[in-house]
Every structure is written in structure tokens, then in C-alpha cells.
Image 1 (tube, rainbow, N blue to C red):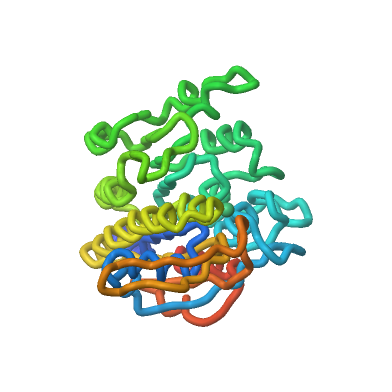
Image 2 (tube, rainbow, N blue to C red; image 1 turned 30 degrees about the vertical axis):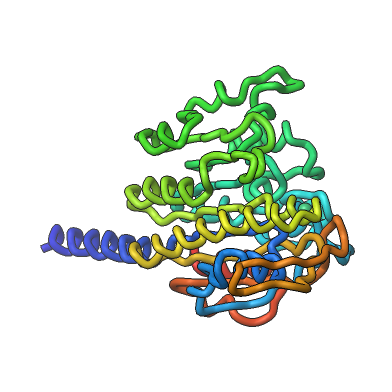
Length: 349
Ligand SMILES: [Zn+2]
């Protein structure tokens, strides 16, 4: 009799634990760097008056200002989204009182989540770095690389290999990261059976898509989701369309448009996964707007659009937040960008 009670209790606990795990949704956070409403609008018309963002039923607006600075940079806004605190421009994962912050990626790891980071910049660039690094300057790429090597992220894809192997401290982090299989093609990434994979797409910053950047972001999203889906654990994945911002800084609308089109395809791939897999929320936002883009002329039938940039820097315009999947409704309304972290954290609990 005693034994039966014990077995019953064990079964109950086991069932409760499994149910809890099943309730934790997968989170796919997609950040279009510098992707304000004008960039989305221009991109939408340029690809035939349609965007994957029209699938999203919940839309909110996030305020992007940094701590004591009206216009944010990608480090402060990345920290706000990743860690839930406003900080100074240029700072990653540290608040204005010099306290180190835990990111949503790190928190999700403590809750049994798998994690993945994908970017079309280097993987040590400000936005992806906000999810694993604590440094007082976004320019300390070698320190950031060291922190990625110690972060336990399961899959990472991006440029910047040189910061891991050509270092002032003479360390070779690629060699030191013995838990990882390092690959250099999409094919090798897809075929790898390893539980931790690093894929450097470039030694330095990856090229523009229009100059031959490879592989396309949507293919990388699909390949990573294929791996995560087989692992029987919930996951947190951050995908950055990094170079929409660089097109804004260059004041080149065509650069913005081609980078948006690729990011849009990646969003479509993530939504298709969420629909098929279930229990997956896709959140798409931007860290800030870049270029102060205004759209002044266009032809819907011919998929053309033209406009004018008002700055080579960022602007303070609010950015849209799109959410699809379980828990999406909490992302409607107007809120600080730090709330994106808090809303995701509630989902992970
Ligand atoms: Zn920028």
C-alpha cells in the first residue's frame, strides 16, 4: 500500500512537470534593426503591396529612447529588449547603476530552454550581443566574443570569426569552444548532428545581400528551426535583420529594400513554423528607426517607391511590435521597449 502511494505521487509529479514544459511556448524574437514604419511600408510596396507582417493579429508600439538620451543606439535598445532596462548608448547588458543584467536568453536557459542567435551582421554586433554580453562598450568585440564563447547558446549564426581567433590575448576561442561543432556552409550546418553548432558566415561583417551575402536569412531560420524542433525542449531564438539599419545609415533606399525583403522572407518562414508546430510565439519588432525616412512618391502597380532620408543616424520614432501565437495579445498597446523583455519573461515562466 505504501509503495502504491509512493508510485502514485511520483507519477503525479512527473505528469505535472511534463505538462509545465509543454505549456512553455517557443519564442522567436525577430528584430529588424532600423526597421521603422517607413522602412516596412517601402519594403511592402516594393515586393507587390504585401508583407508577411499582415499575418500578425496583434500590433503594439514601443518607445525607444535610451537612459538620459532621446535617440537610442542599438546597444541601449538591444539591452532594453533583451534585458528589460534602459541604459546608456553604447552599453550592453549593464544598467546605469553598473549592475549586470540577465537577458531573456539567459533567463530562458535557467528554465530549461534551448537558445539560438542568428544575425546578418557579425554575431558580436550590438543587437545579438545584448542577449549574452555585459560590457561597457559595444566596441569591445574581443570581450564580447569571449562572453559568447562562455554563453552556452546552442546554435549561433553570424559573421565576426576574426574576433574569436585574431585576438590581443592570443587565445583561439574557436578551438576553446570544444562543445561546439563549427561549420562554414549551410549544407554542413543542416547535416550536422551536433547539439551545439557555431556557423560563422564571414570573417568580418557580412556583405550586403545585393553584393552576394550567403546564405539567405530565411534558409538559416528554417535550418535552425528544423534542429530545435527535434530537441523536445522549448526554445528561445533571436533573429536579427541587421543591415536594414545600414541601408538607413547609408541613405540608400535600395539597400533598405533588399535587406527588408530578405527579413520579410525570414518572418514568413518563422510564421509558417509557428502555424505547423503550434505553441510558438513570433514577435517582430525594431530597435529604432534609422535615417528618418519619409516616403514621397511611389507606384503601387509598378512596385516602386522613392523617398528622402533626413539623417544618417537614428531617430526617436516609436517602432511597431507584431506578435503571433500564444500570449500574443499581451503585446498590443503602447509601452516602453523594456516591456518587450517583461512580456517575454512572463511567457517563459
Ligand atoms: Zn544603426
